[in-house]
Image 1 (spheres, each protein chain N blue to C red):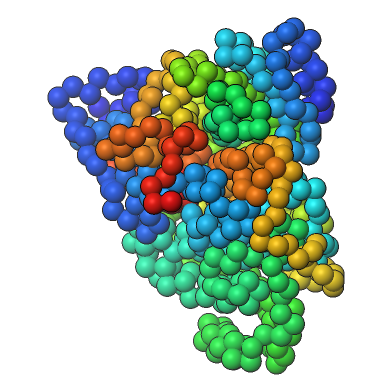
Image 2 (cartoon, each protein chain N blue to C red):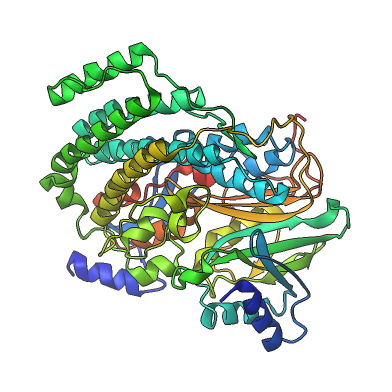
Length: 159
Length: 408
């Protein structure tokens, strides 16, 4: 099954939930949903379509793109070890959060593999994952007092 | 209560009431041979109740740095996290940029890249086993691995120009071609080592690059038999690693394990086969898989992988066509069309993933690195729970975890 039919399946099952999509099997297949719906779509992707682990959770600050949006995008890169035909292309589930108050439900109970990835996005972008069992700083030093460093407003010192 | 019973108990309980007997110990952050890393372990007696991996001591902000550098000047610093597997770790970056630019490397470059990546995979695995040996009190393995690694590193320096961190891959090919000839001194040095190890004379009196590479590969392939007798089939090694840190198949999938750890648990997943790139579909090689998923299986899968890498290098050297190695000479400032792309490769430690977003400028808008070591953190946390303190080193080293790579 190609990812294109798979995205079609998601769209028919969850009508009106997919806000945006990119379908390019060579580069990236991405569906954008709202934070309220992300958990139900995630459960469907895991239980019915066989995406059993998260490869990465990426945060992107969208405020300096050509089309300026004061939002943070959180992308879950999904993968499957159990279904071989899904391993050739890259599937991603994403959501866009308000930059002033970035909050979304944690998907840690759907995919336990994203525990540390979510912690990283929390410290680097300030996104609060509600329901995460252990939302602490991960990589930054304990004395870090500045804003989350991966936001575009943050200018590294010495430049 | 026996240790085994307690272990099952700890595994089952979600929250373990540690009571007053528990002690929180900081394991690290000394440099365990790979980079600074700390484990905060809660222990009762000598049983680990909870292990909390604490990375970040060698965090360098590579992802932020990548947003300030141009597409080409990003390459050297992105391979710094794992200098001994520098080709493997930046491979995916170059592939992702190529996807966005829509360029395809020439045929010869598609063979040179796997040669470099596989040489570094072997070098990286040798480094792994050298330190694994040291931490289990087997220093012969350390000396042997480093002795043999030297000749493979010499090969990478012949191709890439430096011993480590070559910045060899560029979007649209590789930086330079492999040399036609090997320096006479290198052949002399290798034949001296060959005579020392095997007691025979090197059946080679040419400086031809292909023949020299094949000779080194054949020598190393034979040498692996010695490794098996000396280290992997060694009573001491088996006693420390067999049935220790068992990761079942379903747990490996659930926790998102990668690389040798994943394959040792019986999941046949290798990006060189499942998501092939460059010339990998043309090579015949196997993906070694373990059965049980204990520390011993993880080491043996790594050992067998070296043999498969030798096979790939020998095939690539034979099959490599002549021709250009670069699509065209790129200026330092390239512009990449706007868009998003993901590329995945199999680095020495497992699946390496890059997510790249471009806004059409001369610098990336966002570069996300998802290194294999970072994805092993939940596995490490799971495996150490309920183990004895003495089993921390075998489990830690069996994962082939590299702190600098995880921290970026």
